[in-house]
Image 1 (cartoon, one colour):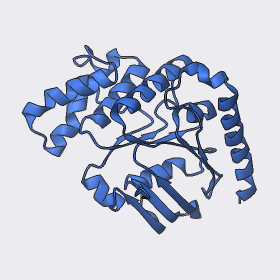
Image 2 (tube, helix red, strand yellow):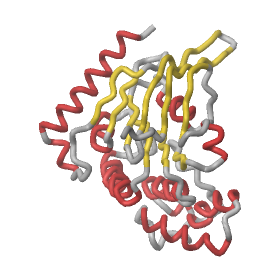
Image 3 (cartoon, one colour):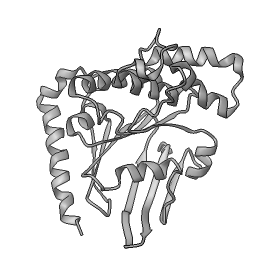
Length: 261
């Protein structure tokens, strides 16, 4: 029996109208994401990776084609809180504690106040920030702030987590540590994750599926099903299997330039 995809796009187009003429951000994008997949989107700057993620989230409106999230339109999925979204910057309110930042979406969504401490405690534990709930964002490192941002996105327990290059501004050592933690979190929660990155090693290390995109207008040039096991120590990046997948991603990025207008 064929599984119904959690996220499905068919012939998706998106064109922005500007004073200088139309910008074709996405063209003919088709993709299925299954429940529990960890899917990374990789491509050159301006290729539409973030735009595609925002279309899935209902934050941008496609101008052609179809996309569904849990069998709903992106707008319906957004209103039903079907996903959590993690932006490039942590975006924490400096006048609220970490607990207060995590509580904010719960307040907006009308969760019972008595239920909030349990939810906050659970997600702080998931991102290894126990004991930091009463700290303010400015008292935490950049990596810890991003983990708090992930906790906030997890607080209302959506099945889908969309992440727009959340570790791009962090140094390599911190990034490696957060990659390990994200894989552990994914294993614990079994969420479906869509993840935008510019890093080939990050995409290969994290993903069950890697979506390679071309320069604008963004097209999918390759979809790579990872042969790597789900449990991945960092040193798997030195194995022939890892390097082979990374090579295919690199080749897909090169091939994408053949589409460049």
